[in-house]
Image (tube, rainbow, N blue to C red; front, side, top):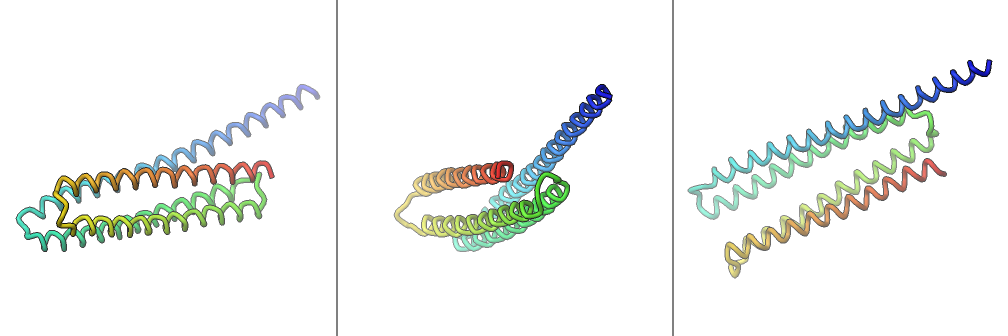
Length: 188
């Protein structure tokens, strides 16, 4: 009888560990799929940008400015739509994962969904704000007659580095918040 109970316990532990490993692999596969989609989207935009730069050759300054503004708005619209699609996929994945999680109560699941919904809305507002700031910065630089082309390029490079650092800080903060939230649910 003791041997049977021990064997049953060992099988139960092995199945639970296997289920956790399966969930972990499923999460990794999902994150990799999302990353691949982002990389493909960015590669497509890089190709579009290269073709766009070629199309600007031979145009007047006014035509170039108008074309650049139209191209920027088109890509921004594409980026917003792409991000929205990815958020919808993340939302569906999160809800499916939580529906199959027997360790959390319905209240905890709802709390976690609300937490991530808040972060997604925060990210949307953050990106819209940084986009508007960047557009204003680029227009200011483009319209400054006192700057040489090299100075403009240097200012744009510096602005991009500042934006990268701010994005990195923003997402590190969110990562820390996510980790704290998950730990608070594990150890109420």
